[in-house]
Amino acid sequence: MAPPATPPIFHYTLKGVFQLPRRLIDPPKAGVGTVRSFKITPLYDVVLSEVLDGKYLPPLCLKDFEEYLVFVEHSAENLYFHCWLRDYLKKYEEWQASIRHLPESERPTSNPALVINWARARGTFLDRGATLELNLPHEVLEEVYRAKGPHPAPSTLAPLYKQVEEMLHESLMRFVTTACGNSGRARGFFGIFVGICVIAIGLIPVLLSILDHRSRWVRLTALPAFWFGATTLVAALHGVCVVIFLFGDCRQLYPYELARPSLSPPQPLPPLPLPVTTKNAPPIPPPSLSTTMNRDDSSQTKQGSIFEDHKISISSPYPEDSPSFPSHPKDNTAASFLSETAGFITPFSPSEYEDHKRSSPPLLFDFDSLPVPVRNPNSPRASSAPSSKLARRGIMCQLTKVLDPAVTRAQWTIIMRSAVLGVLIALVMGGICFAVPFDE
Image 1 (cartoon, helix red, strand yellow):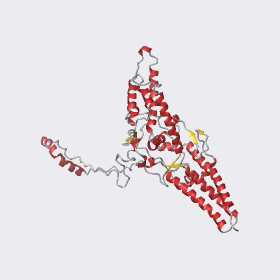
Image 2: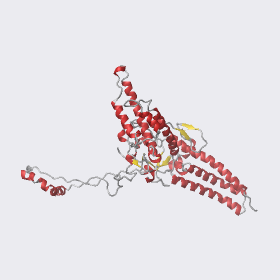
Image 3: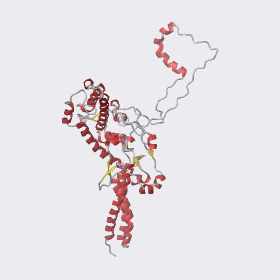
Image 4: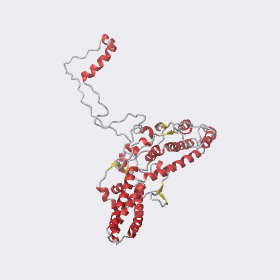
């Protein structure tokens, strides 16, 4: 499997600024249910089954959710087990449907394929010390182990399904809230700093009015600065940068997206000179017996001369003037990226980004494409590599376009609610500044 490609880069253009009035007046519909809340960030009721079925676009697609669980919460085993359980239940129903027409006495009590499937699932998710051991109560696992038969029925796995789905739902809500922003921590601190500076600039006419004994009405000129500074500050506290929103519906790349290695460009091979033969050239005689017997003794000395005579050279797969591709060292998170995500969960391709729709096949679970987690020596459970090794998002981090209308609507909502709250803050600060007395 090839490494996941970095999402297409979004560049700052004036076209996005010109489209700002249309985006503010006519935002897209979220397409999902909304939980009533007085918070600045909207709460969307995203259904887990719809995420697994690929009904959402980046940054709410299944691959984004998996990467969030791997690099942020370190609990991707819940998602993998849920995917396996959906696949197992589907195969179990197909097996039951295939034997339904048989008489009761001739129906088999087990299916060899399901027996192997269940054995691999136990060794991967349920047994103590498993590669992707689930964090489940011991009582729930005991019920499954006491079940009779070589492979359990769906009713036996119902407690497991309920526990894992509850944990996944909580993680999904946190993931959706995180995806509603468009900036990282560094950009957020920068937005807070800019908001405070703009508010401080708004205090200049107030101070001039007090110290220079000017009219009180001069202080009202501080209201626009108070409003814009408060709006920028509140939006930055909720993960949305006003400047990024100004240029379009986009977001900064996540640290694990920045850490993805880029493949070096292909290097053209030098021309290979071939020996030229003429029509009158004598045929090459077959090797004699003595030559064959002495071939082993002189093979090492002749190999170099053969390549030198024909001028055969093997170029390096990574040219010196191009970025190198690491050789998967154990302590390099970027190089071991493939071993930390599942191969059966495919990311969006560049063509799908352009079409704004998913064209890949449905989710097909595969044990062999599951990631091999890095063991944490301080914990008996397996966990993914720590996210502290990933590159941090800087202030001017690269951007990528937001495709899902729910996230676009969420960013618009945060900006609008921040603007309304900014009006209230500006009126309060303006009223206080207007009421400050001074000696005439």
